[in-house]
Length: 463
Image (tube, rainbow, N blue to C red; front, side, top):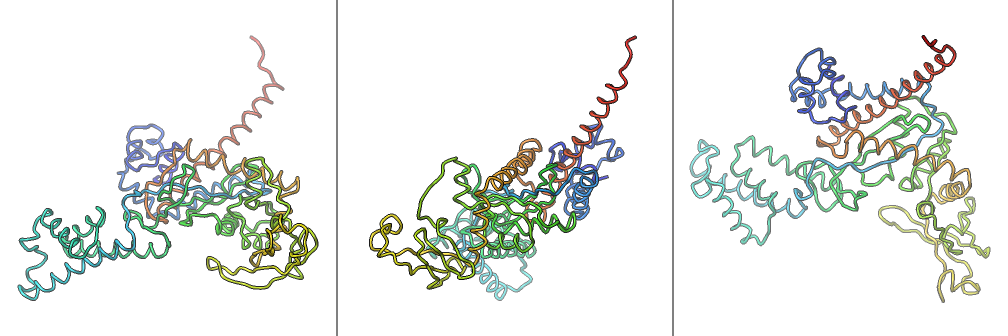
């Protein structure tokens, strides 16, 4: 009953548990689905948390059902991601230095408590001393510590310290856990600050040219039907590492993809690891590099005769050939952003008549590359062909409109819950509702055609 209720609400673009509970009391459709039961909003909220597997099964049913009725063809699958705002404020964050300061001040309070327990006995409990028995006195004490320790605390930090000071033993443990979790997520993310309300959220650039606390919603969509075959929520601000997980999720739902299945994605997925994965799996990928994506977007072609893509990579010899047939061989290697990079040079640039245009006067041409240059050049060459461009155009028409439907028709522009696990449930519900609408429209269209054909062959006589 609760599953029917939350799915119906998601189809109507209603995500708040309180609003769903209200609909179960007032809306005849929802009253029918619940059998006149009126679940409390807490029950609905708890159901979403405790029965995530059941909700996931419902989504998989929409995928397998749409395949069983012939909607899903798996001829072309498009993969993409979009940023969805987290239920967290950009202002309610802490930096590493602020976390250290909070822990330092809390430790001062713990040390004072230990001294007082020694003086007055542990039976004193959590009772605050007279000089700290009001919020105002605590704030004054914090300002004194700020001056003494030469530190500055923001409002979120002050609130945490104050809550720890006035809280009982259980509340103090909760505050310490919250600080530890924030510190762990900050170190894990490598970002400058972490959210206190949702530590698992990450700062991400969005299409509003803002950096907001968000999650990255990934979907894989069937071109012929518009059905979302797989979806996931990730903390990764980029799409670089999401191609393989999405394909594996599709196969988890529908079985192994046949060789030659077309896979398209934008240049955010153009990494050597992704291209190698597609080739090893014998999947027909269509992913442009950054330059090609820019040219497709603007319609302006950048024609630099001596750019890297004009240098031919020879896989067997592991070298590059320049436009004037000079060879650049691998000479050195170094690490950049934690990854191995190789440098190729050694051509006779000094005697070349194009030295000025290619490298600059008195300089030698150096090309840097990683271990996937062969895969990169093969994909770039494919994307230059008319067939490659034609297939890549399908990506936009396949994957962009489901995002539009999710955000504007289903009113899903921000997560209501917090954490990867809970936001994952919201993601599953919105994917389920999108698929149900697609299935309904497909069936309704077929029924309409049947009635039209029947009425043409057997017109109703005029009476």
